[in-house]
Length: 578
Image (tube, rainbow, N blue to C red; front, side):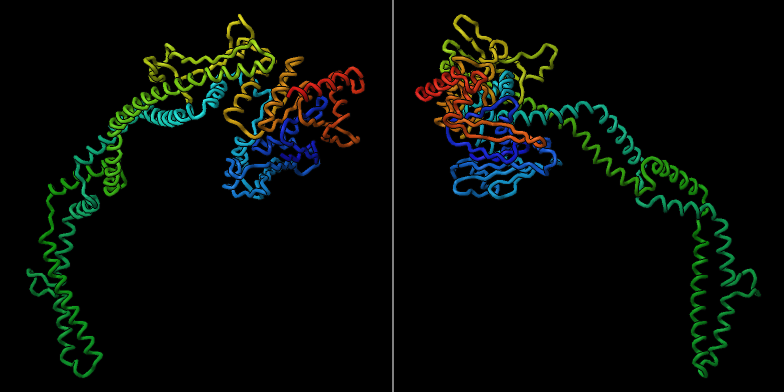
């Protein structure tokens, strides 16, 4: 794997060959550049603080040799990447403003794709991972990872059912919590619909009644006007000598008719007078009928006014006119049907919730059984590895238990597993705890309480070695995970890492010469300062240079004969005992 460093690491190029590579240097020399670089290459958070002041961007590049059928290669090709002679080229650019770009196999990709590739490429572990192993959730994840499909298959079903249960429970809680509000809303809608139904308004009825009320309210004036107009047009029978418009127009028409043959213009006027006479006769007839048919009954007027008052009551509450009132009624009827259906929905959701809780109980029991079956094998495997790490008498065990539901908790907050109601979560009802008995006669205790820093380092390394056998990845990167280890234990850690390197690429950032001596290759990170810029460089140590660095790590004195002799002895021991 070829990594181009970033930021303060400048343009150093680190060649990570197969086998065991140790990265060493004085404190503060930037040894974690490999960790930082890999973290960025594999989707880690881009921090603009990594860009050196005055630079526009920091760039990390990696060349990873892959089998074309490996999951990482397949995923890269799905993203449009191409392999270059069996190698995948990855780059990550971080600008001083914090913008980040990623490229895989010559194709620009979202940073998330790098994270997907990371799962199949590199396992990175540092001191923070040791602390993470102290948490029960991480211990459960470790056991699940070791168990493989035996746990993964029922866990996938459990997770899907758990997600659906949360959705159903949330909807059910909302329906029940808002039941009072919805009942009040339903009562208001039902009251309004009853009012409208009792009145039985018709479309446009308010407009028609307004016109009728206006007519009835002025019936006498309308009748008098109609009679007067009729008399003006057709004459008054009680005044035989009176002159009416119809008679006058008829006389005018007769006068023109007698001479119309002599002039076309006058003939046209005669025709128009004839039309006027006919129109006046029709109007006079309609006026006579209007006056005769006009209803001036005060009881009808009272009835109209009463009906208009009822309609106005509706328009004040439900719409600006009767058309709007009827539209409100239609919408409210639909909403009321929806609200009245909540009881049925609550019943359906309650049934589904109970069924999901029962299903979760069965799946949780399957998870417990699968974990229990794997726990003993996992504990035996880790115990065997601890024997290789200078802890021959240590014993690891895995305890599984389920938390009883709290007394003040609602029974619906738990699920029934094997006849007991227990608390549960997204990963089941099991609480997993790794226990360590460091020597014979010592009671098993949780590693968070019973393991020293050095013991915890070796437990985590043992766990990773076990994972390497059950779920291997091509590369393991350990960042000072040997903290708290020294003496013979450090030698055994180095020896075990060398064995792990026979089946995977192992990179270790370390302060321990006993560990570095077992590496196939040792890299030295050094800082230089020209007075204005501090740079970090990487040197491959061989021969005399490696002995000097191991002497420095042993005694702080590169030229000490005693330290040199010890360094040579360490290298020889490593060469003969791998």
